Length: 230
Image (tube, rainbow, N blue to C red; front, side, top):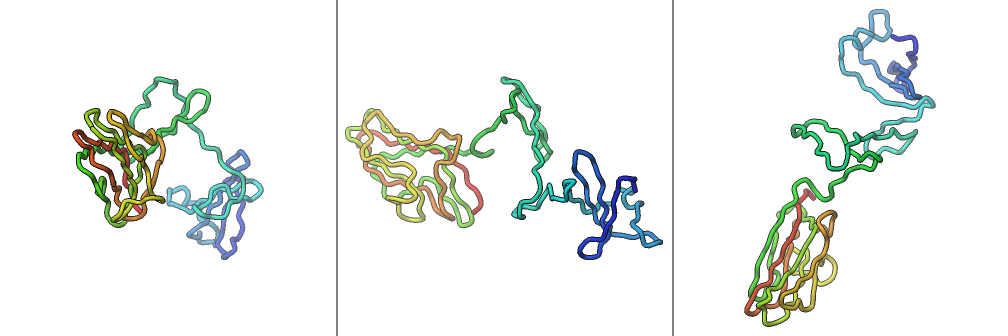
């Protein structure tokens, strides 16, 4: 062991080694084997065998913790690689580790939404009642990031439309993502810009529409969305 290694007994009687790695941070590791004289076996470390590791501050507060653990100790800062505006980062293979990127002022580059945004256009000429625009099965949810309802200039009437999440009946309150009492010919209504979440359906809920008839023309619905496990 190095000179700056401390050994003590853990609460369960296991022998623990604490290595000071500088900066007020120590690595604590629990030995899984023993040497012939009853001490920790440094050969395990030299051979590269995996050992449980936990980072701790000099004061003993934990720096790294499991998800949903009670917070303790000081945080470790997360760094980013600086790239200039207009620069394309070099792509890595799927499944590889990658750097987080920020501009030269340290502000992180962030893409909103989801890595697999889907888009869909649906066209209607007749009245719709609880029609499914996007369907999803049990165990999944639809997440809408943008939605538009557009009426053709050739329409001879205003078209009312209401769109929302439901398993059977288009909602009128909770779950509505877009509504308009009468979209004039040649105009439309839009919500969201695709960079964030506009609405999330419950497990197994489809995205449904109830609308009036687009007489002499059409009503078009454009949606950007993704599905995710419930």
